[in-house]
Length: 483
Image (cartoon, rainbow, N blue to C red; front, side):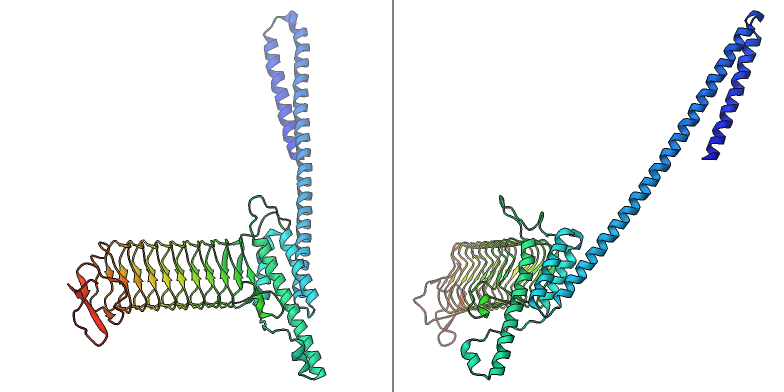
């Protein structure tokens, strides 16, 4: 500051001397009578210049003083902000540590309190939501025995001490069940999107930008209906319904209706003990259900699979519905087992679809399905009626080595390239109308001759031999009988 003032003073002094010299030189050239008056004017001008320089010095001093005050104020604000941030982080850390410690308590009420404390922490601090979600998921991944509560008859069969122990264990199991249901409800409540016109009292915005990792967890009546999240990992998960516990209503083992998964969803090896509802769900990334098992009904009606989808070696023990589903990536159902009816009415397969070595134990319906590219049904077993009525094959249809043990309906379907039924077998009726299957190949295909009453019509150029190749079996050959 002193250096700046000295510089300004020197400049002012020099400017004053220069001004005086110029004015005196000018006055020296004027008439003598005007010298005294001009000298007085010169002094006045010089003093004005000095006053201006002084004003400049005052302005500079005021500016520098203001800068110092502002810098000090900003420094104070920064220090206070850092202190507030540190205090907030300490409070968050303490709250997080306390909540986690509560989850490890032997008392169910304390564990519940810990979950609600973590929920409040995530609600107030969006940057910490993922870690809270990870903690809740980790709790659900912890080992959990599906122990049923003992009834009065069971308790009477043991000693008084054993009875008391059994009741205590049953009570603990029921309490742990409630804690787990609470964790599931917390996740669902904050992942669920509000419907138009609906208000929520749980958050100002849903926690949609989080990932769920529930690998190997045991989930009870799991409900993510209308939820949205980034990615989901549920491989090796066991989904059970409320019927697992006595005196409790029966519910779906898992509900994902109208949910949205922005990235990958991993259900490989998952076991659904009850019904599974994925109706109108959107899978934005890869969806993997390989080796999954569905004990109850599985509903995938209206689902959108935006990327590659896999159901390889999955088992559907009850009805499976994929009506109007959209498979926009490569789809694989290789080795899948449908023990009851399987419905794909109106589904769309944008890329290659594979059902090789699949087993259809009930009726299989592909009516109105659109296969935009090749569809593979190699060595598939259709135990009952299979329908491809009005189906569209944008590429080739591959059925070599497949068995049709019930009626097979391909009427009104269209094929852009060719259909391959080489080495396939037809036990009952089969209906192929022209001109869709003009390029179909039935080399070495066979059919049972015992069911002559079943409706049969083969494509032009193909028919049944006039003599059986083996007892009760005939071959399809070119130029044979079409009916």
